[in-house]
Image (tube, rainbow, N blue to C red; front, top):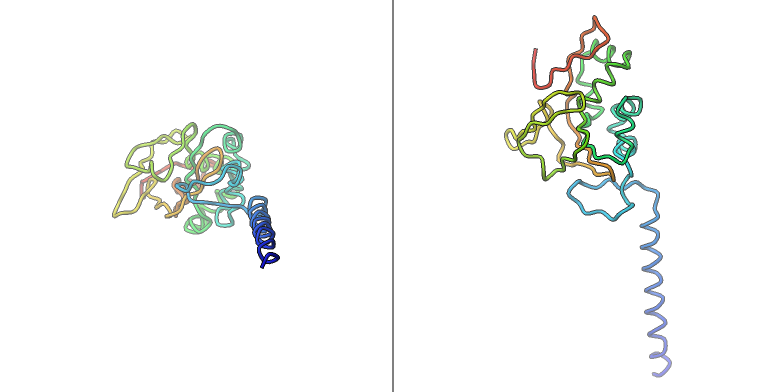
Length: 196
């Protein structure tokens, strides 16, 4: 009986060591953790920048690539605060062939597109998405609204999940907000919320 009692502290100690190893493994795991914006995540567990977050999200790869080469890249990777309404790859598939061709061939159009989906200097988290007008980095006043129970950025519907990084938040949208491309010029015409 005395021997069994002396093993009890040893087995509890081994259990504690095992739990510490599992916890340490989870904290140092290289898998990116992309939590909802309203989650409270442990410091250091989320991507450092919104650009890193988008680059690590397969469904945002097109927008991330445009953002990486845009004039806003320093803001998206810096210490400042930003909010991104990132069109998913599926949103880009909704563009016409002419719009896609123009967008892919014009760095200026890509730069304009990124600017129309970014708010610099402020973070609008999921709980802050109340009806309001916001000014994008491109200078366009865009409405955040609630229509039929669905939050929208201009005409784009927001996905139910948003992602946080150390320098801001990314909301995924189902439509490219600046969706009209004038194929006669190298400028993307901004027409947020307008149909033609």
